[in-house]
Image (cartoon, rainbow, N blue to C red; front, side, top):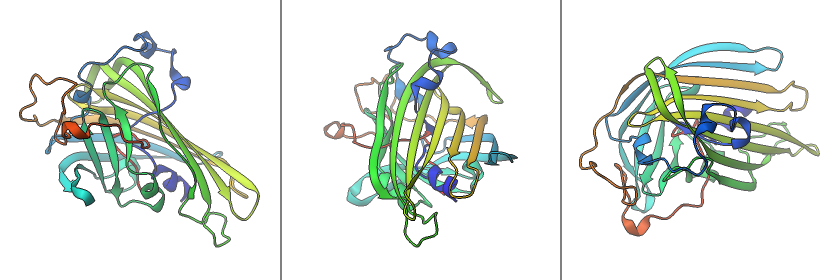
Length: 300
């Protein structure tokens, strides 16, 4: 249950996190720090009718007992929805993200980046965090930004059984690590953008003077004109009361993709609004918001 609640705060078509973990260890470090990635929005297609099919693997359980499972997930852009206040968002439907059943997630893309507006089904914790930004345009190598930093909010669950929901501090950091070649069942993408996100939760148990720490690190690769081609995610939760702690590893890789062309986007420039959900120029400001991956948030 706690692992599912942790997942509810993430990205996901998900992305994004700590440069300290993998920066400088492989091809991603070969890209010059500070280099801007041209036409960043092209890495996040959102035209209605676009469809991605993924194969996945999940390993989860107590530290001494890990169970492996295999699953498939189809993600598709199904349309738009108007939220309160008249804001229009794109609807992404996933059939089985992370092997947790179907969900709809809501995003808005403009010249400033991509913002996540929540999902259905969602959780009380997620609703306290959204909306939040999951990527900034233009993407720059080694660029990091704090996606969120919320303290003393309702965790949405009574995990120590004393009749009171726990309080939690949640912080997220997103970093563009660079560009590198990535091979998945759908093919090889030589210049995929690698992005990483790290989220840390400090859950304060109300029955005792104790804090349980959970982390979620997601690394995702995005190909130009294709979108998310692979992500790997590790969730860790320290021991609570008498248990031994928990680890979950999730991987999804692209098997098939069908990207629909967006009309009227030829020859566009990064300084102008872009994509299906382009904002009016007067609204192109960065939201003070939280994370994701990639573009998929796991709300269970």
